[in-house]
Every structure is written in structure tokens, then in C-alpha cells.
Image 1 (cartoon, helix red, strand yellow):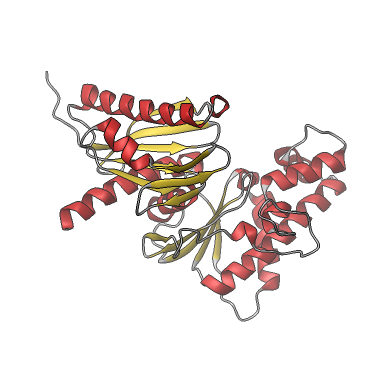
Image 2 (cartoon, rainbow, N blue to C red):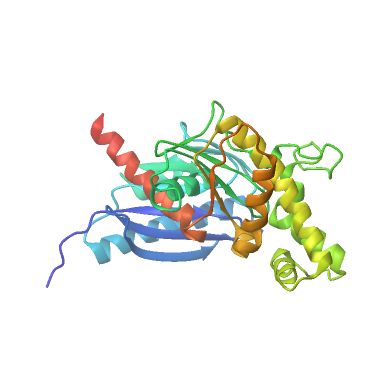
Length: 315
């Protein structure tokens, strides 16, 4: 028996080492999921071809299994993005500059319209609409991974800023005499409070070069005093930067995600206390863990695609 066609979009979340993808139905259902390596070791041209081929395979899968081609595609990528022109301006970990990714995808996919978004802001879009921030009119999404970034949510949309750089809170300077940062400053929050920063500090304190942030969290839970010192030092730096962000943005909710948030209450108990200690006149937001995990970027890419279709219909 022939199945009725199912309307869907392609969602792609491109990372430094891997890509997550899905075909997403109109109600947000993940109809099909897939992953592939990014293969950045082969160079930027190979990365681009991998993305294009993955998107084409997803389109073919949808045609075969759901009876029609994807209605649109949404793609989330790291680095600096020119959303209006659909250009991936720069991504240090993928090696590209001024890449017309939207046009390349549109050409490979035929008549399928394509939306391009920044990975963190796209993840924030998903957390705000269908994740931990659902129902919050103002929120700040902060993933704590190799670095620290942020997504500013306002009434169901993400604020990109005048130049597409809004939310780079990892580069708030919290300790002017702190470590050098790749951005050219010293003492940026991400040099002290990211998962990578905790990994470095714990590897040095423990004498185990292979130790990482997850190991530090386990040692904290076991009561290791050296681990507690490393952990609370990172929490202190994180709280200092977050209070600056809260003062500027006044969000109703602060959503914390990324690898460091996987420590659960080992992170959230001291973090809530450290933020509360610092606020004076500011309204304390609800501080919650992200709900969507590593699927946030892919789900957000799907939302970008559906938004693109609703915009085209309303014009």
C-alpha cells in the first residue's frame, strides 16, 4: 500500500568533528536521524563536499521513504556567519573563509530553499522554543564546551546583533590578569570556566595529563579537596561573567548546557549560589540545565527551515 506523502525539512548541524542530521516533520517530529564525520583533516574543500553530499543523501532518503522531497533545509555551522547573504564567513576549526554555503546547498538540492544559521544561536533557538526555555519570553542560553558562547532569546527568536556577533559572552573579561585568550585579551571567561579550561586546570592539579573536566567533576563528588578548588575557581569565574550578562540583558531564564553542564547539580548548586551572592539590584533569573543535549543544534536547524517556509508564505 502506498503511503501518503509526509511534508518534512532537512536539518544539518555541522561540528568540528561530526555532523548530526535529521528529517523533521511539521510538528517537530524527528522522522529520520543520521550522523557522519566532518573529515576536517582532509581540508576545507573536502568538508564542504561532505556537507553537500550528506544533504543530497538526506533529500533522497526523504523522497524514497516519505513520498516527497524536503520542503526546505536548515544548516547550523560554527564560526562567523553572514545570515542575510548565506555566507559562512570564517570557521577556524573547519578552515573555510567566505564560503557561499547557502547557494552551494541550494544548487546541490535543486529548488529546495536553504536557511543558514550559527550553531550556538541555532541551538539556543531550539532550547527556547521546544526545550528548557519553552514559554520564557527572555532567556540566555550558555553552552559550556571547548569555549563559551551565548544565545540571546527574545520572544521566540534569537538576537544576532548588528554584525552577527551577539552573545559572545565567553570573551567577557572576568580576571584582567588571567590567561591569554585566542581573541587577544586576557582573563576571558572561557579561558577559566569552559570545559576545556577545567580540563587543563585539573590535568595540572592532578598530575594526570589525560584527566578532563568530567574526571574533575567525579573527583569533586568524591570530596577531593584539590578538585573542589579547581571546580569552584571555574564556577567563580563563570558566575562573574554571567552576572555581567544578566545585568545587561535581564533574562527571565538562564539555560546552561554543553559538556560541563553534564555534571548536573555538582555544577548547578554552586553556580546558583555564586550568582546569587553577586547580584544586588538585578532580578535573579531561573537557572536551569539545557534539555535537548547534543540534538539542540539539529532541532534548531529544523526550526530555521520551517521558519523560512512560513516567512515565504506570509510574504
